[in-house]
Length: 342
Image (cartoon, rainbow, N blue to C red):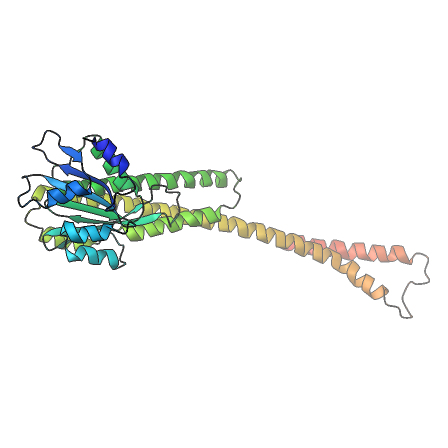
């Protein structure tokens, strides 16, 4: 018999049903959690009376062509879950559908590189005996949860598994905020020491990332309120309180994101002010050069005319007289320009 580690490793990319990993949790069994494949999952779901206190977690790859077909055929999920997969609404929410919970959460890709495009959605269906999670691209929170389960962490109920997943996702987002904060600290240090090479583009990317995370991750308060007001019968009060606490962790992360956005905005304004100051300084230098060159250009234009009657043409000191005139006017123009600058 294959070990859980072997089965999980073999199905990382998804088996013939698109199942990435599956775990059976049973507190009454010798092993509180063990990995299973799609065939074993079909056999377990076909039982008329599953063991009391046992439940199944199945994680699917929606990019696999057979994943949705398998779920339609064997999982007996609510129609709301399949409608949620297609409706295009990716805001984070938890709501009730018949006798199950439907959750939509957003997370960063496993290869997250601080780009707004590195954010994808995870769809979750939670029932008393079955938890289904589905995604199109590898996500960090699910991978962290799977690692925890492989290490022996076995949630006691399906609702506790959902709460565990929400807390893991909150931890992932905390790490994202810390990573952005570290980058902002480096840019701020460069700005304070005067060595900033105008990192406005980098700040703009990080601000867009935080805005998108905040927009997608803010839980819909109305949906959670309706759920907690009328939860499914199988959802224990203790589990409901844990779900409420997990969503409150999101609120803390979102407040940190808002504060970090304001900090980035202030840095952008400071950099923009420095750029404007540099531009003004360059324009002033250009203006002074233009003004200082104006007298000699005017006189050169006048005396360069090929007409009769040019003054000082016959004077042997005419050149030096013109030089004195140009110097005088240049000094006067420079005095006027620098006086206005001061």
